[in-house]
Length: 118
Image 1 (cartoon, rainbow, N blue to C red):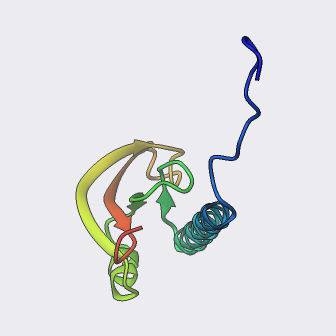
Image 2: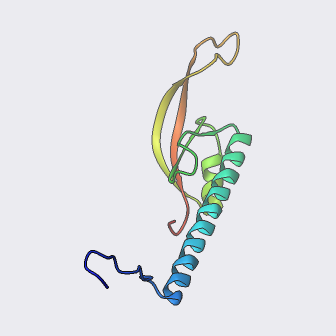
């Protein structure tokens, strides 16, 4: 090789190391897709039962807000989710009825997480 000339690039990884890295990337992508699917299902169940998830999509633990009389947190706990009570919060919304003109709602807040970690 002459002075000032660059050496040819050599692969830093062997074929075996490269295949292992690709496999890890694929497994991480599969796990990410599984977590997104679980989040969508949870959000659908919560929405159908009058609650709401107020965290950004795919964030764990998910913040659940329900009316105080809701049985949804107990039901999610029985399904295996980790449910942590975070107290009550007040939200502003459209009045429920003509006779209840207050726009304020008291909601119970919970953190919902997956069992066994992510």
